[in-house]
Length: 370
Image (cartoon, rainbow, N blue to C red; front, side, top):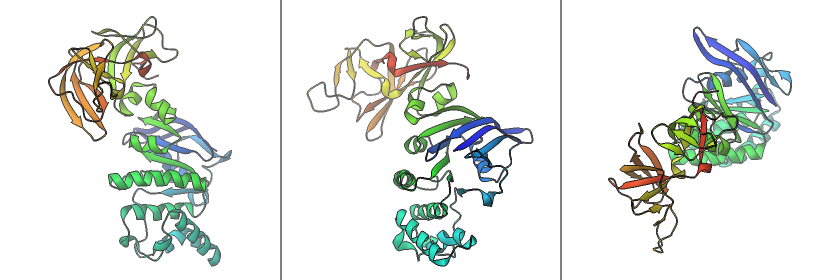
């Protein structure tokens, strides 16, 4: 549906976008993910028509999108601030775009009623924005964006102004709404969890370039560059080289279990990426904390473990409700190794432990971005 080919945008000496190419399908929920200043919002503004690229093309269903002025593009943009008219009611805010198109009053009333019902604000049409909660104002902005029935809805950090619980509720609401109305959504965010929970596919941006485009699970489990490995979720990174027969030869630790990415040559400089939840802890008595009930006590317990591949001491234990994070100091490794276990950990700071993971749960990637 939307094809972006070789788009470049410069601001003086700063290159905001450097030859970006993407393809986004009809009805897809697509996320542009990256840190501040990586170029994702600039790309969104080019699609919307508020910026003109220095090079490249953007087409919608094969038609040149860049040749059309912003108000002639079948696109709606929902701003981070929502930009509601404070003196207008909810219904008037939603109807404003349709009124500018001079649609019949009966048609406007019908479409506004339908969209307010869709976003759960049918009984709030007479209220002013100041009388609504943050989540309700966000719904008004969404209703105003979809009432014109655009082919493409662009959302710029749509949930950043909401608190954690409302944000979680609105993530579900956005996904439900996108499935119901069938509009293609493109969302810009720096929040990894938001992108992972919402999107069908994610493009990770860094320094004006696309590092990787993938589905959330594949992106999390198989990052293809050091930046993606470090930016998307927590990761433990070890330096070394790709092993001759698979695996990974770590500097100072010998051979560690891991699965190289395809086409990664043996002996090439590489990084081993191990997610915290993939690591099993074992103490000196050859017991492990796996999150399974292997002790018969009915609690998260301690059972038999495979031999550890690394040894260290527990520095800190943090409990986050459903999961505990343990920081383990491994001599010879520059940073503590992060381990995640389900529930409350029975391991305490100062404990001597061994760390183990399976080769299939760790990925070996090139040390330099390809």
